[in-house]
Image 1 (cartoon, rainbow, N blue to C red):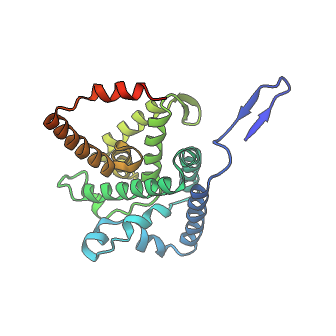
Image 2 (cartoon, one colour):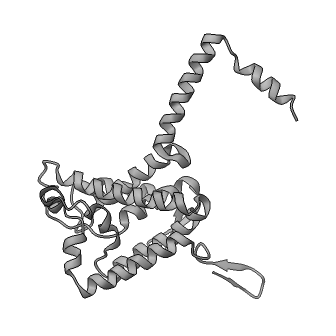
Image 3 (cartoon, rainbow, N blue to C red):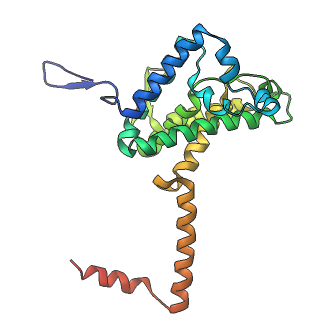
Length: 245
């Protein structure tokens, strides 16, 4: 949204008009938040609790926890982040890839919370019976992607101090790593860290993700073998390409 000063200088806030997937993510989260406020038992069945997953087989919690939030401030901050970074990324990728990425990073955040609860440390023991809710795992995945594509774009730290996106992600990634194994006052830092790591792995191979990277490396290896076998030199092909217009 833009506003124009009398001098003709423009000011803007936000990424612009909302995109399709982001719109439905916001609608789903708000609707489910209202339902959970009316019926708190929803959090018991659909929040991510490792004890319920491993002992009762409630594996659906790995995905449903993303749509639950504890209070108004919790959902407000998460949805603000999804809107701010998600709209830009969905425009760049398209709706289908964006939706897959959002789901993958959310699941990755949940998987990290489950893995943490199995570690044999005193600091991580409470995580086994704790309930994780919120879209923060997917949001951290969006932050990671935004920093990779727009590393110098300023983000307001604490809504006051502008710092480059790559530094912003480094700071919050470091916090998540530090407190994952120390406990973080009711915050699931493991889900944040899982979202970051999953996002990086998903994007490592480009738009096709990690599987595309593996396929690319395999094809490259086969081409190199054929090149050595038949003494084919890459320089000859580039010379031919230069003469075709």
